[in-house]
Length: 306
Image (cartoon, rainbow, N blue to C red; front, top):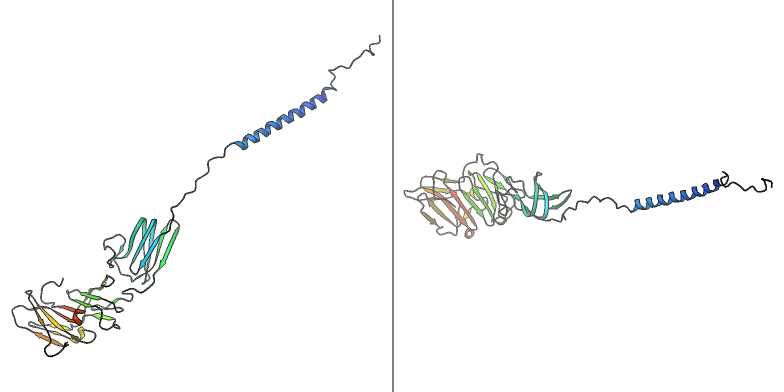
C-alpha cells in the first residue's frame, strides 16, 4: 500500500493553529476590554473626596437710629462704626460689638461721658453713620434740624440759632437762662465781662463746653461796688427790662426788690443797700422767671448757685 494514500494531515501542522491563536487573541482582547471596563466602572464608583465647606457669615441687618448727636446701633455682630460730623471730621470705632450700643457726643445726656463710645470734642451734629461687619456695611444720613448746628463761642458769648431752653454758665459761676428767649430771632447770648464756660440746650439735654476759656472779655455790664450793684442795659441783648431783683449777700441772707410805682425795672438800675455783708450776687427775672440771670460778684465769695 502506498504510504501516500494513507497519509493524514498532521494536526501539529503550523498552518492550523494560526486561526486558533487568532481566536484566542480576540478572546483575550475581549477579556482585557472587560477587565478594563470593570476598572473604569470601579474607578467611577469610588466616592469623591470631601468638599470644602463655605464659611457662613451671620446675617447682617443692623437697626441704626441717628438723632443729631447720638447713634444707636443694634445688630448681632458688627466690627466698626464711623461717624461723619458737620464740621467735616470723622471719628471711627473699631472692635467686635454685639447687641445694642450708643455712639456719639459726650455732651448729649443720652451718652455716658466716660463711655468708650463717647466723643469728648464737639464737632457739630452727626451727618452720617456707617456700620461695618466683615466686608458689608450700612449707612444712614441725618434728617431734620438739631440744636447748636451753627454754634460758635466768642469768649463772653455764644452765637447760635435760637433754642427752646438755652442756659449759659460762666467761669465765675454766673448763670443765665432763657426758656425760651424773648426774641426768637436773637442769635447772640452772653454776659459782657464774663467768660462762657458752657452752653446747654435743656430741651434736648445737649451741653457744649467752651473750647477756649482762657480769653480776655470786655468790660462788665453789671458792676458791683462795696454796697451796691448796677445792672447795665448791655446785660440783656434785647429789651433791658426785668420784673424783680433778688440780692444775695455773702453771709447767705437775701433780699427781694420789686419795682415801686412801675410794672418793671428798666436798666440801667442800681440797687444800694447798707449792712455788714457785701453783695455776693444779684438774681434778676422777667416773664415770671422764664428769663433768669444770676450774676456773681467776682470780688466776693458767696453761697453756691447750685
